Amino acid sequence: MSEPLAMSHSGFKAYDIRGVMPDEINEELAYRVGRAYAALYHPQTVAVGRDIRLSSEALAAAAIRGLTEGGADVVDIGLCGTEMMYFAVFHGRFSGGIMITASHNPMDNNGMKLVREEGIPISADTGLKDIEALVFSGGFPAAEKKGTVVKEDVMDDYIAHILSYVDTSRMKPLRIAVDAGNGCAGLAFEKLKGHLPFQFEELYMEPDGTFPHGVPNPMLEECRAPLAAKVKETGADMGIAWDGDFDRCFFIDHEGHFVEGYYMVGLLAGYFLRLHPGETIVHDPRCFWNTEDIVARLGGKAAESKGGHAFMKETLRRVHGIYGAEMSAHHFFRDFSYCDSGMIPWLIVAQLVSETGKSLAELVRQREALFPCSGEINLPARDVAKVLRAVEDRYGPEAKAVSHLDGVSLDFGTWRFNLRPSNTEPLIRFNMETRGDRALLEKKKNEVMRFIEEANA
Image 1 (spheres, rainbow, N blue to C red):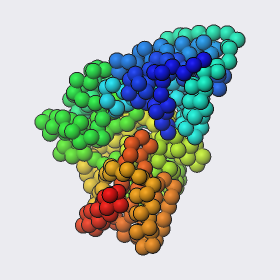
Image 2 (cartoon, rainbow, N blue to C red):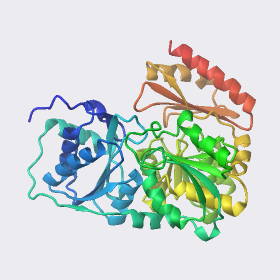
Image 3 (spheres, rainbow, N blue to C red):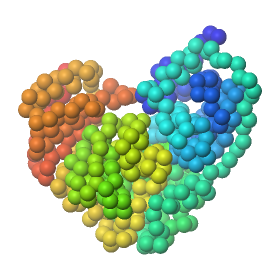
Image 4 (cartoon, helix red, strand yellow):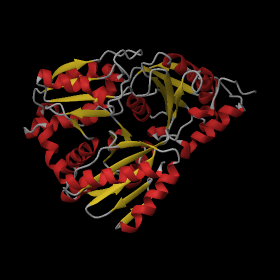
């Protein structure tokens, strides 16, 4: 079978498939991915979900056709968030799942996230390259039978599951502002809110694939600004924003300030360790002094993992961690089959605010002072490897410890930083933290960033 001109290898990334429609992602590619999945893994039943993007329904239909022509039965769970696909797979004990989504990417993008049984991700290191090779060879074996398709609504079971992480009887009638960015979070939220005692101020909660208020990417300050304004305008206790497929959530405190994901990791780690003493918490290498300090104080164990959801999930399974998170707002839970959820974290935080009588700002303020951080800064780099070598050559001799688990991490005792390459763009992601010294943070941050700029010249 000849390779269609419309298909491109460039959509195959480290953890998923995504790109611009139709040059990098299209129905032919989605069909072939379905066929390749069926040929390589011989699944009995595969769950397929899709986000609200205008192209998602057609891509899902193509992937389903590929799966069924390859002999797999399909459970079509329809419009949903990525975590609902994960849930469908582990709750239904299916062989795997495919989610059609481009999450927070621009409107003309789409993509596919693939998992095996129990929501175990298929990444470049664990099978995605094999799928890519078969997609472009077109050498699909004939199936003994054609698979079937059934539609299934998993919403009620999913809502019951995520509510099991909290005790709603301990919650107070907080005022919470919410912003789905017209992504799919609104679908789950509409079913969830009736179980909660909160008063909600809703912003852009209607799913709309045209994204009339901009891409649903709360990592961008301009995308968070309307929610911050709504919090201050309404006197809300906090604000919650989700990305397009709502596997991440972001927090605004009652003063309208964004709370860095780093401090949310420590807050949730503390919650789980108070409930389950001695358990293991997994963190990524970007910033972790705050998390390790909280874990040590509460008698838990901390484990470091390379960043990226596939690596985090692999580490969590290996160490049997109860909870793990990346400071980029991916939160993983053992009882959620080690998968990430954007709904569970904010429910826990709302319970903590209710139980303690403290605002979100008060819950993280001390930790922000003890371990100031830069937040993640994206720096352009034409030759990422060259810049990383130059930085290590310059700062490595002074460091007390150097790690290459994920990019390069350098620890100087009172301050440390991590530089890691982006998996998708010619960028270096820079994170720095200090031990209680914000002036040192600003000084060293500016110094290292200047050096990177010179090394990139």
